[in-house]
Amino acid sequence: QGISCLTWLNARKRKGPRPSQDSGQVSAMLSESCQAQGQITTLMFRNVPRRYSNSMLLREIDMTIGKLAADFVFLPWHSDDRNLGYAFVNFVTSDLAQSALQRMAGRLWRFSPVPKPIKLLGANV
Image 1 (cartoon, rainbow, N blue to C red):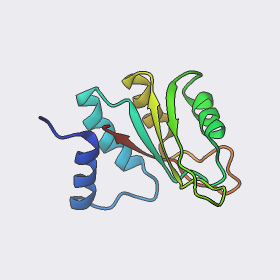
Image 2: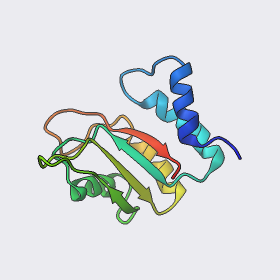
Image 3: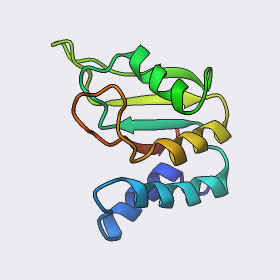
């Protein structure tokens, strides 16, 4: 069986040069690999602002990709009313996931008072 996009990306990050400040280079590498496989529908969102809720994350996706693009969101929470800074989002199709990867990676979170870039990784779950 072939290498998964997430495994490929992790191996590439260890062996290759460190990407620049935003995740654009990483996204481009992941995009090329995952596009060839054409099967990734779940993305891991990293650098999620700690006060973001599920509904805020979904609103961010709705405003960028379109309503009903995602059918599952997992945003784990810490006991002190803050999320853990990452989320898994499953998109209805691999095309929508690819669109999210291209349009959202490196862009700033809209509803965060602190400018933080969105970091995305493909999750082969």
